[in-house]
Image 1 (tube, rainbow, N blue to C red):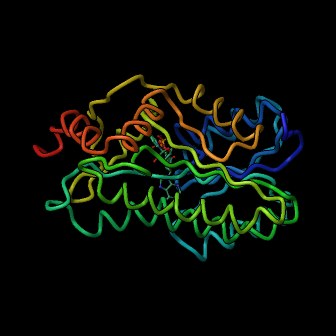
Image 2: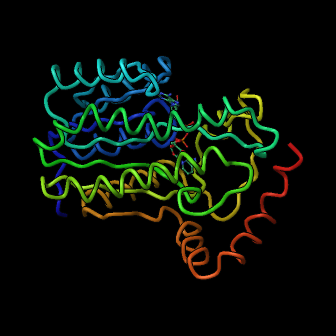
Amino acid sequence: MARDFKDKLVVITGAASGLGYSLCKRFAKAGARIAGIDKDEIGLAALSEELASMGVQASTFVCDVTDEDLVNITFRQIIDSMGDIYVLINNAGVSHISPFYKTKVSVLKRVIDISLFGTIYCTKAAIDSLIRTKGMVIGISSVAGFAPLAGRTGYAAAKHGMVGFLNTLRTEVARYGVKVLVVFATYIKTNIDKNNLSADGTPMGGGRPTSGNVLMPDDAADSIFVAAAQEERQLMLGDTAQASWDLYHSDPAAYEEIMLSLNEYVFEL
Ligand SMILES: NC(=O)c1ccc[n+]([C@@H]2O[C@H](COP(=O)([O-])OP(=O)(O)OC[C@H]3O[C@@H](n4cnc5c(N)ncnc54)[C@H](O)[C@@H]3O)[C@@H](O)[C@H]2O)c1
């Protein structure tokens, strides 16, 4: 493997649940030191306990990644107390499921603020440190980061934006030895279903139908860990992701037809 994470500092946003929680455990298992960021204090307490039981050097930080000032303060605390950052994983995110014409703009903005501006704020706060360590930035995007997904205009905008930001950042930081990995994920069994927002911004509480194989978060974290260690540029996470990439880039109309047939329910919401 090209990269070894032993004793290195890995910062993960959205660490209190789902994929972020599993990523903390996976990098910890490889000997990394962990800084977990989330707005969910209770979830972070559970994470701290689990990492402590693994004997890992870890700290957690309550921070809403859409608050630029708080992000800057949090990263300053992390670097001052734990040293330079080797890996930043921009994972915090939420979706909405609601057609555009019914959805409040404030909901679209919230979704974009978390995934896109959260990624920009955290990366900005970490970039000097990452250059010092010749580190790595990872972004958790989605199939909605390269193809349309009905009922998720805000989410698609956020995830496409993240991809454009990270792919361009890669070209700028390569000369400093910093790598960038973009992850295009399909369905992972996490709390995202509960946390997804409806048209007026209230959490949906679950009930999203899925298509294709559903990944378990620990398995997803394992694949991301391997891709990071191998310095991959992008990872298609789940077989539906690769199939979607191939079909959307060869026959976008056929892709849209299948995607719409699977997402007809969003027009009833
Ligand atoms: N689960 C899936 O099917 C799926 C598919 C594709 C991409 N993703 C992406 O994976 C990432 C992780 O999501 P998950 O599935 O583990 O969901 P999750 O809801 O289980 O976890 C998301 C975490 O992000 C945190 N978070 C949300 N907003 C935040 C904010 N403003 N500041 C700080 N923390 C915040 C939440 O508190 C939560 O702990 C997201 O970016 C999501 O878009 C998930």
